[in-house]
Length: 158
Image (cartoon, rainbow, N blue to C red; front, side, top):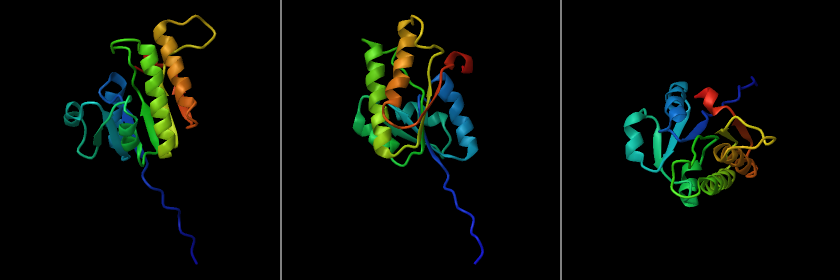
């Protein structure tokens, strides 16, 4: 009997932060690559006109774990490109909670990898509140147990 090549499924990818500077540039690249693309948005109507018809846009919020479970169902790789810096209140705590919610939902969904774009810093220096938040967000995502690729160069990549 002839050897049959292994059929690989097209990976399913979720992007958070698709309306942001990096996410807005990443989405068209992913769309062109042929992956099954889904974007999480608090306001889907604001994102839908900006994406290809093949891209699924789902309503969700990082502070609503049930919405994350729905958004991450069937996803292989999830891009975490969000932050709470513009939100009202203590954005460090909001970033921690959001990352923890996302990581736990990704673990429950069987996501194989989270890609996180953080800040250019190490834990060895006194950090600004913003950079401290970026480092803590990466830590919270890693604590989920899902493998995380963390790029600590958002300013450079941007």
